[in-house]
Length: 117
Length: 118
Image (cartoon, rainbow over all chains, first blue to last red; front, side, top):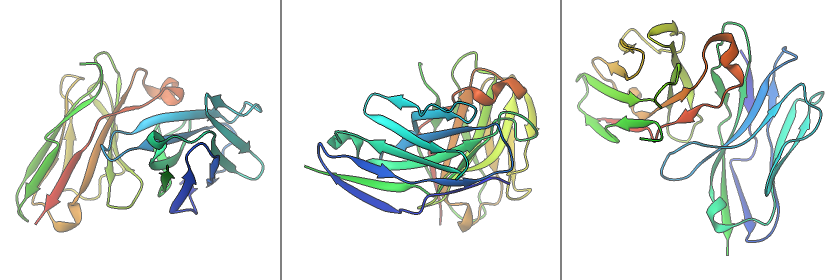
């Protein structure tokens, strides 16, 4: 089974500064999808950004960007110009596009991000 | 409604009681997933439906857990004879496509049901 590791249980950043959250994964597949989800205290899981493994270009969504290193099986999230509303638990997730897993997500244990004013 | 809804938001049960958790996916979504999120952990897959067919139930932790989606829309996760280790947030997610074509489609999550077993 695929495993996703987030080695930083907690991170903090000053408002307007930049922070990077780390994620590594283990898979034998060559084609897959990677995601970062944000979970605020309301528990609603919100998709932040996604990356298709076959694309070499790193995904970006406004202030959020990823550093995808396929050979190293690394997928970090960079948040620029951090805002107070970015404070939440962030989960890295893996999904296989085919086979018996049928789209199930494999999540890491999460990184709690605190944003200081 | 525009999003996935779940009810109840909170459920307290005494050990040994049966509980039923409801998920209303986004209208027209083919795929429906249930995940279990223990305190301080990431969500873990429980089961998957494509329309009314339960195609994967490999994540259900025991035969006390049962899920159904009889008409291909609303789904219910039932836990019989609840135990303290069942205490967790139960998340439901839906996506538009199903099957092998569904892997790239975004999963939209509900707010979850927090189950506490005393």
